Image (spheres, rainbow, N blue to C red):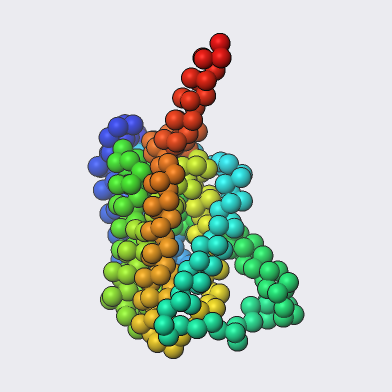
Length: 307
């Protein structure tokens, strides 16, 4: 028998606690198994990525929560396509700003096409970027879905009563802390594993509004998974080079000061241009931003005046 689920205006603390307990159990269990099996947890990272989705799926199935209502649907195809290419200009901006940091220089030795067995040259670099987008949106996207169904699927749906910004803050915090076993093991910040946990949590908080925006606008969790997958794939392109570990890991990187600054500016841009209204039916009804509402009201006024 299904338990009572959340109402549109309240958070079901039982379901939320169940999700967090299951997620914590999976994280601790995964960490223990990899340790006992002498497997580096970062190497097993692709499997670890599915722990949020498993927790979210269990809570949904146990409590009668429709999977389509939490975003497991195709949604807007236009936003699916946008999510696949959007990481490139964002990462490009991070790279460009990183090159302005003293001690960081352009790494001209990087031959991206060669990684894919392609000839060198500007045209083939674009082709290589296209390959990255395709791989990121498909193979990486499947892995990223393991996270996104948990974060931007069930958890976003459950926390919808908090509104766009508070829900994004909470999810970003949980998202960042969830990476702790990977970060401590050397992922992203190999020289600063413990400072890295704090840095990456701040990064996730800064990035969370963009992910929330994509999900609400598309009415689907899939663009978040695609964006996540391409962002991870394109992150291997490191044209900003430095031998200084502080600059490389804590400053001139996606998870450093430059990356956090760019992501914060994107969040600010969302706030300025019109924050989408987050409700429990974000996946079943068209999301309307405050600016959209104003425009529609203006059109109704003009139509009325013409009559």
